[in-house]
Image 1 (tube, one colour):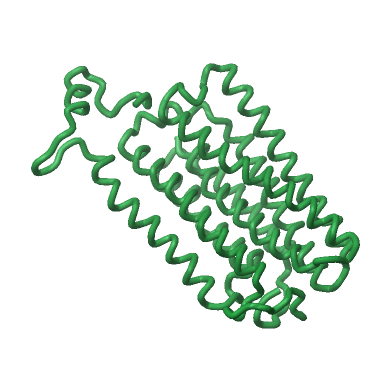
Image 2: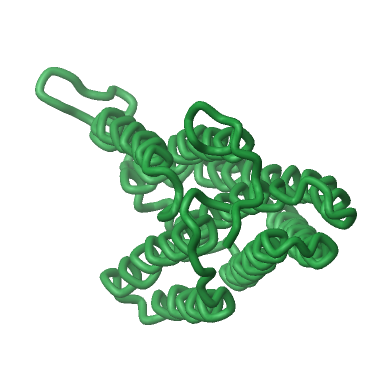
Length: 116
Length: 189
């Protein structure tokens, strides 16, 4: 399966951990606290993804360039986000503004209703 | 454990597995771009939380459990294939396919309820993202199940057992995508 012979981990135990984490990620946001929601929903998602990638996909025992290839794609994703986010998330800058956003603010519908 | 894939490759990695990793890498960019777009729009429009209130967190949570369990059977199939037990690998892949089918059925019921409530792909940008991201992911689930059927059929005859690992890598990636879609679309209200 991989370049290096290795023992298979206890997959059922890992699955059980993933199910417990899923339960926490569902129940955590019920407290209604933003920080708790952030940690239990998105923090745990990162942990779950790591567990699946490491133990089920066996990324850690592949040739090193496989991890580099995947990380490069993640870097491009981050680059896209940080390059585009200012334009999407701001309605004005030093020498520019979005007329549409100002019109919406004037009409009392700033921040939108999810319909634009 | 002995390697079960062929080793013909200048890269020092079996050709088929290298191809699957390339697929996964390209999928990271596809889903990553979609999710990054969603995140930046969602952060810019807190009012979207009102729309997200209408997604069914229990259906999403159940589907997460289904996909995690299907990943378990996929990796157990991989282990069985490594041990040379094709019929067992095929049976375990069958469980994974069952999980994929169950995921799609739950999704169908969920979407039916949402559409009947008036939330369609054109209702708002939130719902456009919701149906696009979940729909694209659903297509990957369906595609994975179909390919897995061919792999399982060969595995049952103890043929091409290395392909069990390859479809498993793809399936686990589909699982990971859902692990991120679930909190983004269902939990962040």
